[in-house]
Image (cartoon, rainbow, N blue to C red):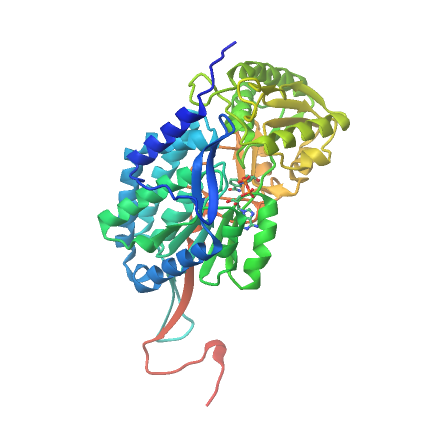
Length: 515
Ligand code: NAD
């Protein structure tokens, strides 16, 4: 069995400070009114105290971002705005290791996933720089002679970005890089669990702003919890609130933004499933599903939580997945150790939720085929390392229909594709989905309007690990937002429809006569 000692909290604090230094963050906010702390799930202990914002200081951040929007940024040509993001991309390349280090310290991701998350930021920068020359509006044929009908896209205002702990840097970049080239300014409230990572991102963006002559207030960082986030929810100067997190958070913020007629872009919880058909390549299934279900210790919004397997192959799939999980249990531990594949859960609440879900699943007749045990409790009493679990369920019971943000994979069986699709769609969430099949008709059916009801629908790959080029997001309780690639940028701009009369007459539309 592979074992490695966990790093000491003091060493992790020193590593985090050194990474921040290299990113150019020379000042960590001191605790004053809003006392907070940086923490690591690797040992479950505080690294050092830091200052959180207060609602008053968050309000000042919104005011200054709003001033930068009206005074400078909205009138800066989009390709010039793109140079800021290009410079950010260069700095991210230079500091890829440093940011990944902070992601591992604060979010507990294994090294290759942390590096992958930073790579995603670099990719988004490239996408956004190209986009800065492609914010196209259409020209439509006018029904009137001597008239031109067209649409133009204008910057929206301040974008409030609230992010979750599990993608502490990528989700920020999806929003911020696109918003900045669209001419918006940004106020970012990261998860209170990943403040250091946020300080590093903000520091690099401020360096990029200084290098390119952009106003520093194009981006403001406010640290703290839901009280500080609440300022972004309530302030009418925040034109768009882009909020990523649990469905409970979305339910709390969306009505308050709607009340003030603001716009919301919600990226909330998922309960993602893969359908495994009789023709599926089971080698692919096992590799894809084990990564999708156990990667990031089951703490991705796109984590595979349900495997819906045709009864003809159910036994073989259960055996192979269970065997793969048997190997995984040897590779749970320090995420800095490159032999490990599963780092810690974010904290005690996540562990309690996992234990309770497993109890409920057993009470519903579920059979735990592998995993579920806590690890390294002796070495680190406040850290929560767990063996990813596989549970065979007799039915899609209530606990299976919920998102438990931990590595539990439920196995369900089906007889025909209609039943599989019904099970698949029979949950409140609608983020990511997959089908494994070599039958083209089955694949097309799953991709069709009568198939998966998710925002992401894949064939022969897992549910997690989306590329930035596509629009990312989901339906139903996942909130309906789309971010990152394709035409997601439109959510960050306002559309004006323009009719220009270049003729001497004044014909009215629809043939109306007046005067
Ligand atoms: P969370 O809901 O606890 O917190 C998310 C963010 O919202 C944090 O910054 C938090 O401080 C803030 N927040 C919470 N309540 C708030 C309120 N009332 N007003 C203002 N701000 C508030 O989520 P988490 O535990 O950090 O992340 C895990 C959850 O996020 C999971 O449900 C996961 O599926 C979801 N998630 C979704 C996506 C996606 O793109 N769909 C991506 C990542 C995570």
